[in-house]
Amino acid sequence: MGVQLGDIIPAREIRLENLANKRVAIDMYNTLYQFLTIIRGADGRPLMDSKGRITSHLSGIFYRTCNFLSAGLKPIYVFDGEPPKIKREEAERRKMLREGASKKYEEALATGRIEEARKYAQMSVTLDEYLIQSAEKLIRLMGIPVVHAPSEGEAQAAHMVATGVADYVGSQDFDSLLFGGRMLVRNLTITGRRKLPGKKAYVEVNPEEISLEETLKTLAITREQLIDIALLVGTDYTEGIKGIGPKRALELVRSGLSLEDIFKKYGEDLSKISRYYEAREFFLHPEVKELGELEWRDMDENGVIKLLHDEHDFSIDRVTKAIEEVKKKKPAEGVLSKWF
Image (cartoon, rainbow, N blue to C red; front, side, top):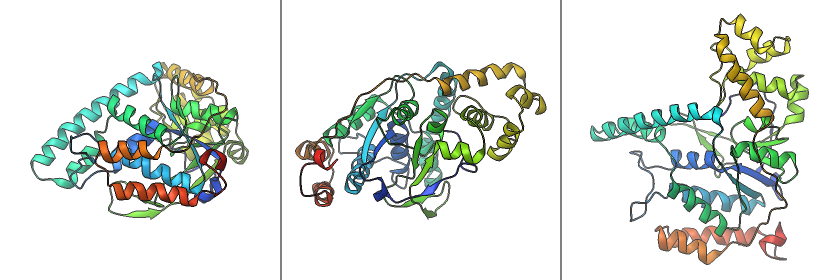
């Protein structure tokens, strides 16, 4: 879900080409959910090969990564590890919601309510071992580094930026700022268009660059206060307080009120506040691992074609065309590793 802080976070619009030679650490679980939610047929069914295996995620990964490489961007895909204890309750709640949505999808499909079926299909997306393993296989064949986080991928990506292993976190969420990621880039889309939720309309979007330092300076707060603002609005670990949005939370925190003061002001149950303190501590000190320099390799063209075309029925013409576009746009002096 991620925390919704867009109303108060200053952002600078950039172009994808501005990220040439920049190392961008991308939370892969969020990306996979995005592909599996969006890349579907009109009735909500995901793309599948002739054996009934889902391929929506492979399509999204391949074409988006080709787009990144053509622009000179250096993606790093970060996979989640074990969810923190504080998130397990939320994870169980989401699982139940997905199971309920899955039942509603089947009912809507059976009665011909196609638009409704698609909505419930998007809400029922879940990740299994096949989806994760096939995604990683394709990424490695494309020569892109893979990082397995010990816990939250977003926290690991933020730490990679904080320690100089990456230049940006690439995410739609603002959580990486809370985890101490110095630079965030949003809207790394392939077409520059995004569908508005629940509507048959699209808007043009461009990447946005967000600096943690500039955010704290502009808002005149500390990172700890930014975390408290997020906790009050609602995160993956706290439900937030009803009636408090980002702007109101900013006012409350800047006024010098503590979380306990705010709980009392809004008549919240003080027995819940320990969870907020626990979440704050997790944002400040998440479980991450140290990394050295990462390596980008040449794409294994034959391996990619074998996986996508031979194993999963992708159009050979579309796959080879995308690969040729990447090769055409890289400098002539050497291989991808030299280009980077």
